[in-house]
Amino acid sequence: MRKLSVRNRILLLFAGAMLIAMALTFLLVYIVSASVMKKTLSDYLMSAVDTNADKLVYLTKEQAAGEMERDTNDLFVDYADGVLQIDDDFLEILNDVESALYTEEGELLYGDNSLSREMEGEAFTGSRLYEKRIQGERYVVYDRKFTGKKLDGLWIRGIVPLTRQEDQLAQITKSVLAFLPVMLLLVVAGSVLAAKGILQPIRQMEQTAAGIVGGEDLGRRIAVGKNKDELHSLAMSFNAMFDRLEQSFARERQFTSDASHELRTPLAVILTQAEYVAAKERSREEYKDAFTVVERQAKRMKRLVGDMLDLSRIAQGERRYPMETVSLSAIVSTVCEDMERIAYNDITIEANVAENVRLKGNADLLERLLVNLLDNAYKYGKTGGRTQVFLEEKDNVVSLKVRDDGTGISEGAKANIFDRFYREEEARSGNGYGLGLSLAAEIVQLHGGEISVESEKGAGSCFTITFPRERGTLTDSRF
Ligand code: ADP
Image (cartoon, rainbow, N blue to C red; front, top):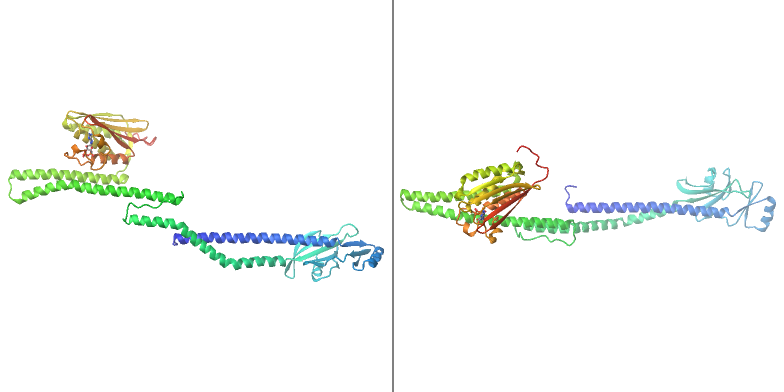
């Protein structure tokens, strides 16, 4: 079964189900027909026997003598002390039903035929209907006892062959069998059509998906049918996946082009310096200046390449950065302490850290997140300014805030600062690449949190990060 194609599997299942249904229907028709036929036959037999039973009268010998003269057509058979008058309407054979009269002891009185003679030995055990096999043939027999009117001890036995019913059933079976090839053909044709119908939309999906994956057109989408069935949701899921793929391809393309663009300037500067020193003999001072420039540019490139590497590692998620229960309180306190020592532009860092705030996360990344934010607070802060860090936990939500009183961010830039390589106009001359906040945003996303910014140009900025903390998951008391 596993080696069969889906089409053939549907075909087999459909055809199998149809054949089983057909066989069961035939069986049911056969059984019902057989029982209805048997019932009809028995009713018919009983009514024939009952009719014949009415055609019998017991007479004394004297009465019989008179009757014999009057009714010459009737039959007169000696019975007990008198005579039985059998009406000439008593039909020994009526539509296959053969009737005969017997004494209690089984002696045949009237209705001599091969069957009645065969049945002569059969004892009478009460009025009953039963089946009997005589010379290989099946018969239904009905014994009926006479009562009253001096007829006690007299029996009438009707017998009818089952062959007619069997013939009819055989006829039905024959007709069905004659139709079998046609029905099989219909079943196979139906199965082929059903398999085709079921697979058609899937085939369409496959073709579109193959086209997209083949790189022909990432913008193509699978046609979503109107029926809200399983295929509809499958097509929707595929389309959602293609949307994400398209976006991520576009982002990757953009990233590569931005990164190359950013690397071009330092490379060009290094090349110019190399050509400058190689052109002719230079003084010691000139060499020193050239190498200082080369070193500065190489450091920039190193930082850029490092940030790019970090971004691609973060994209690998938990595989690269395993998550465990960490004390965010400890991380924030340590980073603030370390960064405070730099005291860039005399900016102070003030830490307001709630104790025992724990989180499921990666300590290296969370550290990196705060370093990036504090780095910016220094870079875009005013001399002698003040940066405040708040860590608190309320209603199972952990929030981390970094507030500075620096340059602030313009309204138009706020929506873009988390994009890769985005820098505000005035920040372009600085040594940043616009990757710090996008790294921060990716770290927050990896931890299932959210990052946002409030800022006013000239007044300062406040970055807020919230992490939902699953209730009851952090009972670890190591911190
Ligand atoms: P960069 O390396 O340029 O600092 P980031 O991604 O860290 O890159 O920041 C993107 C841009 O957002 C910066 O160029 C700057 O214009 C703005 N920015 C980020 N942090 C601050 C801040 N604390 N104050 C003012 N502007 C900020």
